[in-house]
Length: 193
Image 1 (cartoon, helix red, strand yellow):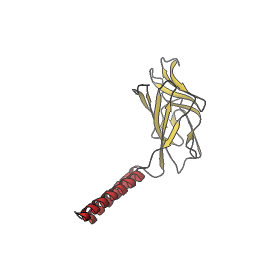
Image 2: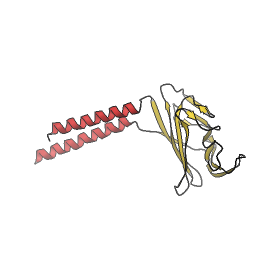
Image 3: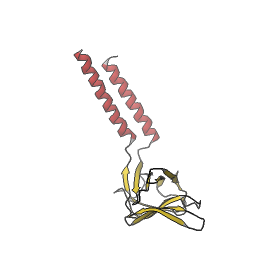
């Protein structure tokens, strides 16, 4: 196989993969991850998404039903030994599943703030929920009966880390660039033989 063919194949694969990724992940949708670690070692990790072309600087969502801007929000809880306690889709398809849902996000600084209540909230005994005030105090709790009784599993001073998920096209571009490097190395090896 000639070097021209190798470069051509790498280019075609990269172009096809980027086109597929773009079709499946519209450019206006932005996805962010978040992580929380409680003082006793319990943790929460999840992600949320919204349309960055229509979202205001401040996104505030509350309660059950259609959301204003959030398209999705999911969270998983882990115990200190990293065993999965539960996974919840608090917002799916732009609809909140929780009566107690509270979410406030600054799109310009990518920070959560103020009231926060995600996961449980459907009244099922044993479900977990994560609530409190960001930068003040946050609690991981579990419902223990249907009369609003719960037990607190962990808490902290309210710090939640938020990070942007890399866009697939960016990652695929890096892979294509690496492929060109491999092809160049092969060409040099062939020339020295």
